[in-house]
Length: 265
Image 1 (cartoon, one colour):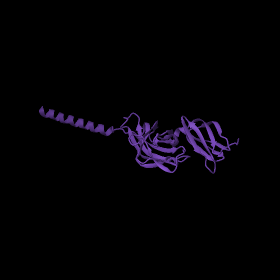
Image 2 (cartoon, rainbow, N blue to C red):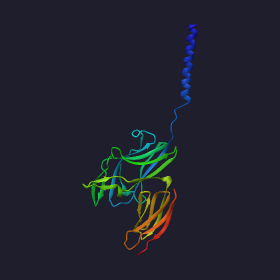
Image 3 (cartoon, rainbow, N blue to C red):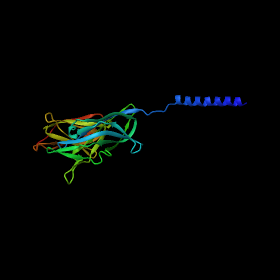
Image 4 (cartoon, rainbow, N blue to C red):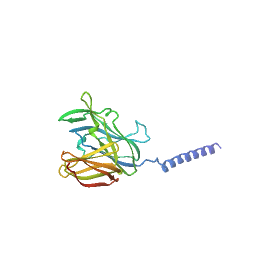
């Protein structure tokens, strides 16, 4: 009887081990899929000669994760970016990476030492409060689809972002709007005389560009779908402003206003 009991005990042990082995081989741990994220940076024209920001890292925060542990790096490159180089249609690629598919709540740019602003030929240190500790945060939810591509542009407004304190220090309090490329379109046109600038508003933000000095061509990019009033202002006192009301922007398309000839008084 004792030998029979030992035999059945060994048989039971073999069955249990086999069951565990079968479970591991037929039900592997599932892994979330991934998608791609590509982030660009542009700037509205301003009166500064340079606004140089040292970006050391770009991160995104996954929805539902801890406020400290939910950050994922999408670029670890250190770049010194002159915001004013990326106006009037030029853009800088901040990040181009793969991430876990899903919902994200925000983006942040970690700032290193050495940011500066140039005014009247003089270079001044640009103070970025908490830039190196908590980063510049852009609160804007977005979703990365599995095997898909999410593209967005961070539109800085250097003119409204750089402030001079009472003791003459320059401080960056960023005014940034984030635009999802899937939801955005553009407005283009020509203006005569070419010495003009063009502007509109997107929500609470002013979008502005200068016409090309030779051709008079201009472009207002990254506008969420909707209706816009476009103002053309000459840099020459001999001409009057012109306003085009109710311009429709469709996501993924460009609206061409053609040639706008400014009138004299």
